Length: 233
Ligand code: TMP
Image (cartoon, rainbow, N blue to C red; front, side, top):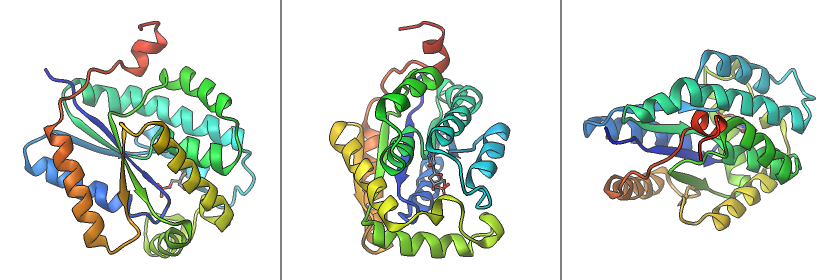
């Protein structure tokens, strides 16, 4: 059985990544593929409980290092329970956020040192990376306006209001965007930058082209988080 593909969708809140993830999932399903669409923090019962604590706007003071541990606890459970079993049976896993979010939000946004993130990443995931990452990029000012109005309309969000991370100021979001752009320049072969500052139709067409290219690529062999933590190379 060919191993599946692990594709992540990253970007600021309000970048449109979640909408495009849903559209990609249905396009891939229509072409007959087994697709798992999931998200972080969350994706499992434990992860959803962590997500609720993590985003609760009443918990205003969670230190960056504590945020780090929470998102990686959710991530390890997600890999073990959902992501790796799906990849092993040959499914495509489309994940809304993964470790790049931690580098951007806790690293660039909160100032948690890169080495500390790397140490926890190694323990939790074996420094696992997706096969490909679509980065939905746009200026923080534009994302802010869109993200908050979308969340206010969304039944999923807290009391139809903004969550704990949304409360951060524009400077925080500028640092997060900068963090993403640094990740992109560090690993240009993994990332596909999608300009999502324009009309949704334009972004949709860029996503379609990226997806077509992904469909033509050969699935690379990857090692699972559990293999690595058990001492596999
Ligand atoms: P979202 O599901 O609407 O994208 O919200 C998740 C929020 O959690 C978002 O503001 C980014 C934040 N987050 C982190 O700060 N670190 C992480 O590692 C992840 C996965 C998410």
